[in-house]
Length: 198
Image 1 (spheres, rainbow, N blue to C red):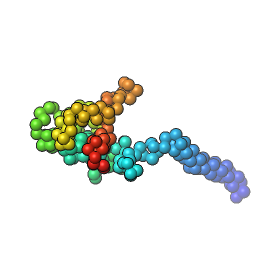
Image 2: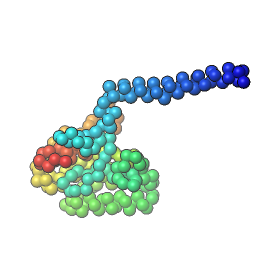
Image 3: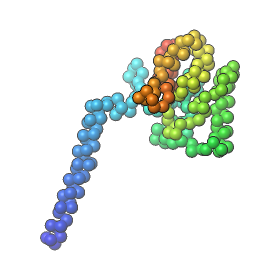
Image 4: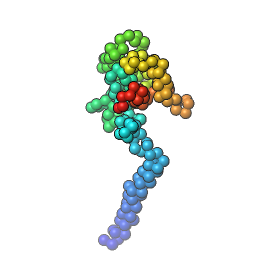
């Protein structure tokens, strides 16, 4: 029995030591560094209103359907749109009839909201992103919606285009991806301009 304990003791000591290091020390160090160096990101990259209430995240899209707002990308998450705990794409291929039907319905909704707009509908307004949570749209998608938003809010088109430019992020490292517009931030700026806080 004593011999068995001598053999098991180093294994138990290693287990306890590694459990303490990987289960307590490492998470504590990483969490402390994260909160110190990246406090906003650790807290969820939250967007807050003037009262300090969290109204969204810079990383997760929100659904807008009123004509006076810019609309974001469709979300394929379940059981509801933009569900961060259910991030997923639709996994529907281009030959899938369900995708064609969904795109046709989205195009119809955009046309109904702005019947006079005969421009081609940008693809990102009718197709979901891979995560289903994308908070951005392309500049083309924002410009496509600008006449409707300007008309609904009775704003000069020039002012709406200026807000789009102000809320457009450049390519990452100036070469990766495309310029993109953060939908929630743009809509909050519109509300602030027209005096309707969110």
